[in-house]
Amino acid sequence: MAPPDDSISLAAALDGWLSAIEPLTLDGWQSSQTWIFGHTARGRVCPYGTEYGNQGIFEQPRQLAAISGFYRAFGLQLARHGRERADHACCELEFLGFLCRKEAFAAETGDQASLQETQKAARLFLRDHLGRFASAFASLLQEHDPVGFYRELGRFLSTFLAHLCRHFDVPPGPAMLRLRPEDDGPAPMACGGSEELVQLRLPS
Image 1 (cartoon, rainbow, N blue to C red):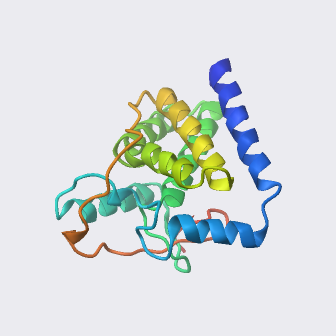
Image 2: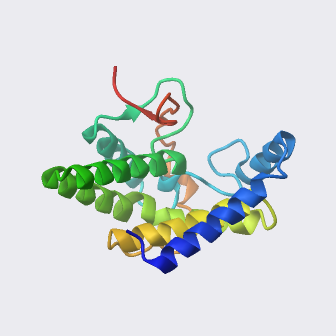
Image 3: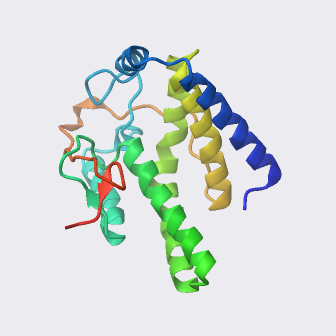
């Protein structure tokens, strides 16, 4: 359970995001998305976790393999008909949400072995992957959309991440993090999209 002040701050951040959705038109959302993310992996705001940090030439493929390994360990894989890499913020957030649901179910049913396994995986994934870059990603959303939907989404994400880091006892990542040098060579691509899970799916 989150402490009362966490619950209040999360609710306030969520209300701010929902308020920004109400006046949003489809054209307005599409224009904002293009302005912020562009049509390449590195727009004004980069949503790909392995693009962040001063990494060596072989670190990005290693990190992508590690992220995909987490997904496979819990019976998930990237769906065939999507367009996102394993390190996209949406994929990583969706996976952590999946782990949080498993944690809640294990706690409710008294399955201590599953609870400990899931908590350990969530802690490691948050520490080594999502939590490493997502605070910087959230800050960039707020910076590049100072009055709209993505600003409030960034504010909510920042608040949510702070709560998750406290819950799993993981140090929060920096609010500012440079992108890796662009001359490291092409990054492997993956895909996303499914029915129950938007970017992940169970193997057939």
